[in-house]
Amino acid sequence: MRKIGAVVFPGFELLDMYGPLEMFGMIEDKLELRMVAETSDPVECGMGPKTVVDDQFSDGVQYDILLVPGGPGTRREAENKAFHEWLRDQSDGAELVTSVCTGSAILAAAGLLDGRRATTNKQAFAWASSFGPKVDWQKQARWVEDGKFFTASGVSAGMDMSLAVIARFFGTEMAGQASVWAEYDWHRDRTWDPFAKIHGLV
Image (cartoon, rainbow, N blue to C red):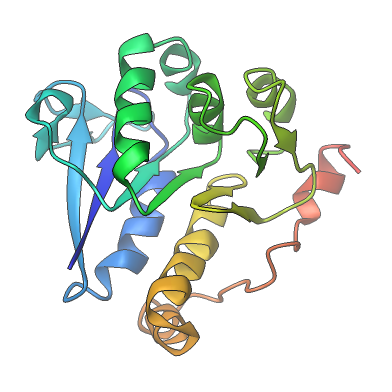
């Protein structure tokens, strides 16, 4: 049983978080989902609804997989040194560190993506990539895998990335079954990215 630490902060993007968690939750006998935040207070997303927190940073729980969403709140969290320190500590012991959308800006600001390939939301590409001058930012990618770091493009791309994570740990057949259960059309090609062209990146 692997433990997923799904990190929430004020202003996180709803689908960035709950899209991947829907996919991960399809195989609940293999993955335990935990909502984690800096404090124990319910966390309001960018769309309004609040998420109840299972663990806070100070609890010292180690997660096998980290999930960091994007959203308007990343503008603040990209400067949150306490968050960055926690991410660096967690990353050392995690099997995988994942982000969706501008969540990669937080990972980059923490120095975790230096020397690695990564991607982010294409509409916010210039802003997010400014936090990682040592990162090899991929302008056209649905998601990017580099070692134990998986970074997804904007919002819905997190679901494709999460299925790729399931495939990595449990096989492509299991990932495909999860997408069928969710009635989701899984984009299996990580290079599929029409939004890069829409936003003038290619």
